[in-house]
Image (tube, rainbow, N blue to C red):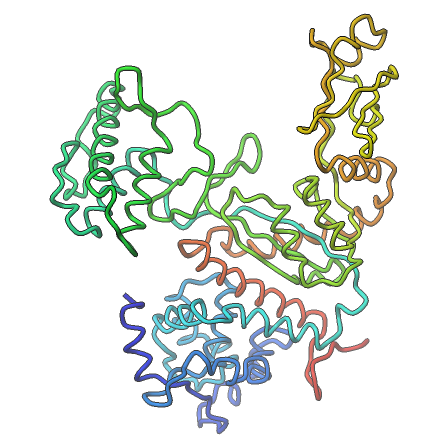
Length: 519
């Protein structure tokens, strides 16, 4: 709805500005002493205009005509406080209305009623669709740079954490029904296609005996048949926008969880599709195992921090099943060469190690655990691999070539070998897999085994765990929006608030510029 009215709103809203003259009941003048020094509210009361100047948000309001909007420094301050406390839009608007500390932080009078919660939705939409959506995060990052607190700090720690989705995970039946309803709603003419599984105009679940496997199987078959009937009706037609997206989602949902039996009926497949969509309400959310016994549905927050200060230098949000390595490398793209990168085994793939090596960073990464063909037997390090001649030599001294696919097959050379019991149980002999990043992986395991960075890893990496704890505190383990783009903005705001609080704790002040107090 907001997107529909945005072009109209733009014509009658211009950027608002805070009045430098204090009102009679100005909260800061009357109650400033009630707000603790060293708090984020106290800092914003004194420096919000310098931190969030008007010119930072001018591009959001290109029109010079209309009614002034809420001042930018006020909205930005509310967004920071909201992210810091993990409040909903309604609760944040109420806090601005009835909390003295928030009124002091935003420069309002005690009797100021604040603004409607929809203002926060409106501003987030403006920020998200702008050319610079992360500007509030960057404003705090600019303060970090101005203080010089990171100067000479040559370590960065990487980590990620899973975030719960804002919607419920849907089973196969629910997804099929939801996707069919969406197509009938947004695709012109879809409502005229005859379907027989159930009444899709009804909001209730199908009336079947859910504990009867035969009835459930019949429902699945009829739902998939209806889905295919709908897709077939529009095959070869050109669709755009929401209609194309709805048809694409239906095709995905109808194919990811089902398979056709020998008799032609459709049934739920006894497998999990790669990159499975878990909800038609939020198609970008994904399923991810945190451990063998624990899993989450939703997204993943990735951060890079400077471990001495705990300041987050970069952050990104992805679907929950995204690999950590590539995102971690991307978080370091603005860093100068020579950074020591501290990370756990999730960042220990050969591809990630090679990318960090090309960027000339120092790798302090815990490697993936070694696997044995035979418990206690020979591992990759017991073989000599010559990458130049592409040959591999086993512990018994036999040498073979490495194929283009990276396989060294010893085959008949294993027959009668005195070391066979420690090498392989296969009747066809030992096969050694040599990846394209074999050298990086071998070196990573050697460095870990020999303790090249053991002290640094033990001392500096734990700080990223603390930063993750700060990130998900106050109910922020669950995202508040749907989709990657909206929750990415939410992550930037959350990190900006945490960084600002951390800077204040480190002694941030302004005296002709941003700097940290020296003791």
